[in-house]
Length: 177
Image (tube, helix red, strand yellow):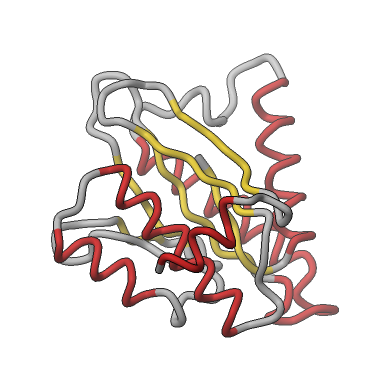
């Protein structure tokens, strides 16, 4: 899973380069050639840095994008990494059990609450969505649709959902929380 915040143009170019590398036959680096998720993070970070540098003179810092890369490569432990615009990364850990990008200050305490309470997965999903809703109330530039992905450790399968602005679930969730 790859999430982004920041320049949409940079994000699109990074995604286009990832897809081109995957589609091109031959011996070259791509997401299909990495053995560890941290190698994928280094690869995506390098692409992002190259795209940003190419547009820096005209756009400056508005050319940057931040990414969260999560997943599992067979035989490895699942991992979650935050890739900075400079190309380096940090990973989720016991001390930092979740990562956020974009407008993160508004709903952060809800995520901290879920971690402290050791809630089950279904409640954690609702709390994560509530965190996004809180952000939409505080910042008009943030809003649906919300893309949700749930990964169960070791499954090598991703459950995905998109919650649209007209979803009956959002006002119900907002009213409860």
